[in-house]
Amino acid sequence: MPGRAQVLTSLLDAITDVQVASGRSPDGIDASTELFGGIDGFDSLNALEVLVTVSAKVDDELPDELLDRKGDGSPLTVGELADRILARLEGNDGDA
Picture 1: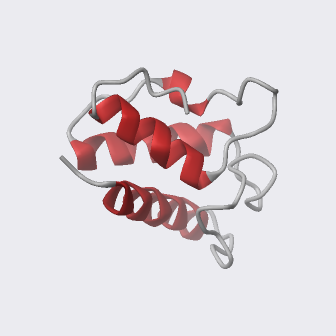
Picture 2: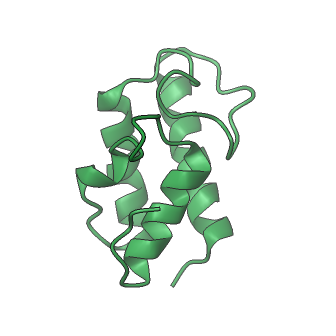
């Protein structure tokens, strides 16, 4: 099973690929970057594309619900999404 660093790297690689393919810069994106609002032009369709890419890398079908906002309504950071993915892979509910 991949560790947090591997999941985070997979997420960052997938986000970078989406940004570059869309003609946008991936510069400055890290674990503390908000998925929505923190990445230039990144939208829910891009997020789903990233989730599908990471699903293939971790060999688990990751549900769209992992992209849901936090309980207080604020957007997830890349690191928080990595934590949710890791929790799912470890058999927890994935709600970080």
